[in-house]
Image (spheres, rainbow, N blue to C red):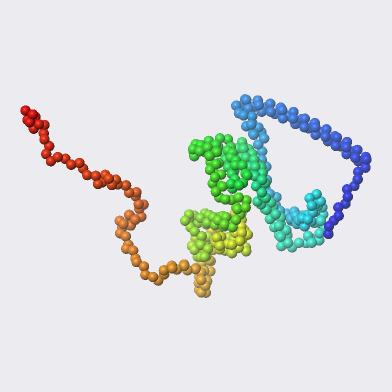
Length: 403
């Protein structure tokens, strides 16, 4: 049922004259306020200059101390009323052109008068709330339509972040460095760097490189990743991200840097051996290696769950490990295959020569890193020493012969 809009009531001449008088008074009050603010700003500017001279600082530093402020707030919790209004707006305004869509007040009245939105079950309420939550997440994290929109988003967001960091530096004395670079050679995003206070000196003192060189190297590295708006959510890219997130979580929970994930023998090689378990694997996604997931939708669902930490690694208690081991023993007793055997070699059953075990000295010598051999000069090696005479005449004999 579509409610027809009622035409607005026409004003009489007296009402028009009254509104005109109110508008004139409001304009005059606004002008007086503007003049007072301008006068106050001029006095404040003069006072800031005096303070900067007296304390040997710049006027900008004083202005940052005066105007540093931030807003601390958390996102509002999604209520059922907002979810119902969102559903009604999606139903009524989806086909309406801009300018003729229903207002928020009219949508509230429609929700209050709709009998289908009353006496909802718990599942129906959850469905409405989940739809609104998904809409908000897509609005915040969705990819921009083109490079121009992406560059504008980066510019505005970067300016806001830099302003917040500068204010945080004034309030708390913290240091921060920001690098923002484009992720593809065809992106039109302008690379930006910023350091609070004298953070730029850190890069020159410690790494012997100015911030501009680090920014340039960072941009070159980012452009080699081939992660533009169209490529960054490709199947292979999301697979790689999911694999890294799973392995990093496994390393963090076990403390073993050389551990690898085993999907075929997950129950024995991971849960039973290390007493950890991957909790919250997304429904509808088969528990296999991300490299074997064939659709972008499923692998993206897994990647997003790992990023949001709804899918995470958890350590098991001794009682849970004992219960899991008992379940495996029961499956073995029932004749079920608990651990898949390793793939046989292609030359299995063929006799191969056995290598002789090395001696202790040879074993240590084999484990050593081979040293570089000094190149010998072959010409010097084969060079013969100059031949000397068999008999050498002394000076006395020469003098006798002279006499």
